Image 1 (cartoon, rainbow, N blue to C red):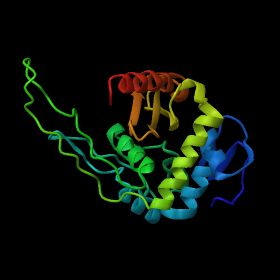
Image 2 (cartoon, rainbow, N blue to C red; image 1 turned 90 degrees about the vertical axis):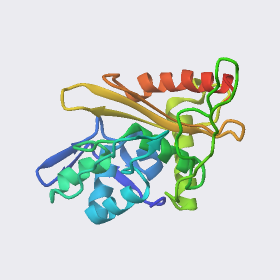
Image 3 (cartoon, one colour; image 1 turned 30 degrees about the vertical axis):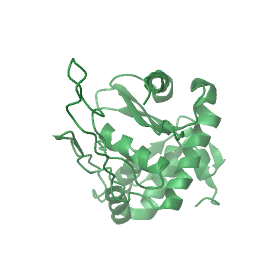
Image 4 (cartoon, rainbow, N blue to C red; image 1 turned 180 degrees about the horizontal axis):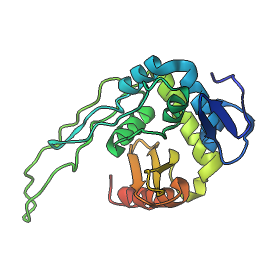
Length: 239
């Protein structure tokens, strides 16, 4: 797959659905397709793999898990792989259509990519203190099961770092080595929701993050700028 070349003409016909990109991307590889968010490439791959493989690996990566965050269960993500329509499968492979993804699951997935396939399970805070600075809770780290093979995680990690270098700009994350992917998703009302998910590669600050802005517009410009401020604040606070 890393050596394969795809051709994006700006649209792809799948059954009665037309998968579209804002403009033709021409001949591109998989990494470039990730950088430019080529809908045609990822829709084509989803159809080639088929619903069984798509469903198996989405479950394996933990994206449909419900995580317990300090006893609070997160809502499970849902994907529409089994409608029998190639066009709907294609849009689901892009991350559009009827896909509903929980931001917490996306953050955990980004952590697994950064950490070789496993990552920490999320908790709200490290510990709590009384006003007299008496510690009243204990932080016990827990890891997920293996969500990705090591080589797959390493490949995605490099692709996401390249994405920042070639697309968002390393200058938007001063002093940090960041891997990320933006997303702009519609909610059915004509409103664009902005996503930005990724990780910081730093042994002192091994952070995974997700920013989701309802009605925020463009993922990279809106949610990306929030992510930059969030990460700088987190590191200044010692996380």
